[in-house]
Amino acid sequence: MVRAMRAPVLTDTKALARHRARAAHAPALFLHDLTADEVQDRLAEVNRAFINPAIVTPFPQVWAGRLPGARVVADADVLDLAPEAHDLVIHALALHWANDPVGQIIQCARALRPDGLFIGVLLGGQTLHELRAALAQAEADVSGGLSPRVLPMGEIRDLGGLLQRAGFALPVADSQSQRVSYSDAFHLMRDLRAMGETNALAARLRRFTGRAVLGRAATVYAQHFPDADDRIRATFEMVYLTGWKPHDSQQKPLRPGSAAARLADALNAQEGILPQGD
Image (cartoon, rainbow, N blue to C red):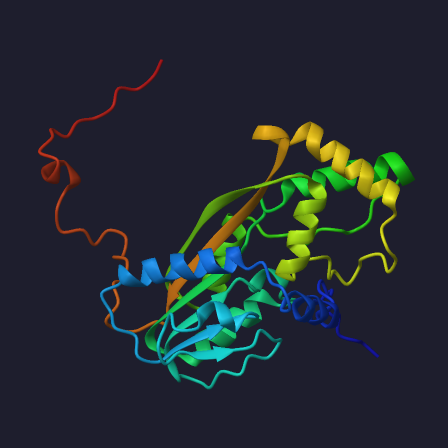
């Protein structure tokens, strides 16, 4: 009997839900606020009035009053989105935790009407590279081994491909780096806890990290990633994925060889033959 291979599970969704519920009591949501501001700025540049938006977010309070009439949807494996019910779907800073990010984007695509817009925002591969390096060095120094502690995040060149796999037209992926200054590594870790972004990896160690590892990590962090005034720096890479639900009215690339004019004529340049090398 042949059994189907299951895809590896990256995220412990129950642990992630606990972390987000804990963070909701005293949240540090500045990254979510920055995301919402940036998305609004991008929408202002689109010559379109969206009347049926939907927002997928773990922290709905961030979006209160930003897009009047928007339907707020909880981040879950199966999104509560009806087929072709929306002309805009925003997946706001949660895709990096998805066990099936392509599936999440496909669900958003199905919820869009033709020529509807998808905007996904997630943390990219440069996020917390300083903390990853410090923890890895500290654990190797103290215990001689390594364990999964910080969520692995995709590179922009790979994340952009998710849009094409989901069937979007005119796909665009870009990123912005946000550098944040902290008093020390423990300050950063407290902020991550208040963001709901602490370790929810399915393969994580199921015991508390020892003081020796954390203390060594703080020392390594301060030595290798200093900021001004005896502080440390932390990087958050925000990746923005944009795509349109296909529609006949959208621009399409011309077929090779179908040009009606020569490039030399457009540039008012003389066409010639390049000399051959020896």
